Amino acid sequence: MNFTGTILLVDDEPHIRKFIGLVLRQVGAPRIIEAGDGEEALAVYQREHPDLVLLDINMPGLTGVETLQQLKAADPDCLVVMLTSLASRQIVEETLALGAVGYIRKDTPKDEIIRTLSEIIANCLDAGEPAEPAP
Image (cartoon, rainbow, N blue to C red):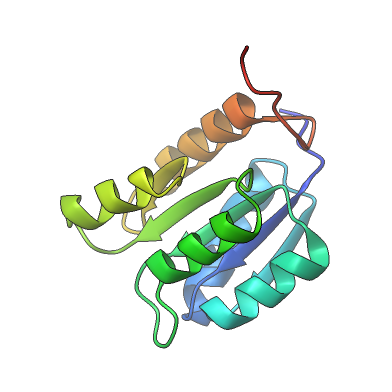
């Protein structure tokens, strides 16, 4: 994989950001920006315009669902993958309906996270640029 883009990693738990950041480096992400909550994520997104956002669902303050809604309102083309420690199918389905391109459970084995992220990046991004919509 030759991903040269920027990923915004949003999670209120620093140890999760560190772990996911290490995984992202294994899929070739050269630039990872972090945010600790939804408000910070919105500000960073507006400033940096990352190629992909990994967004925790459960955060204090602005939740992942609310952050996703605001990201999509500001940029309907933003690519967001939800991170969750929950098994709630309803929440996952809600985020997919709101425009998330996928989700990853935080307790997924590292190799599976790498495979899932690699597939999402390959399917949604081309060398760090958003994929062109199909006609």
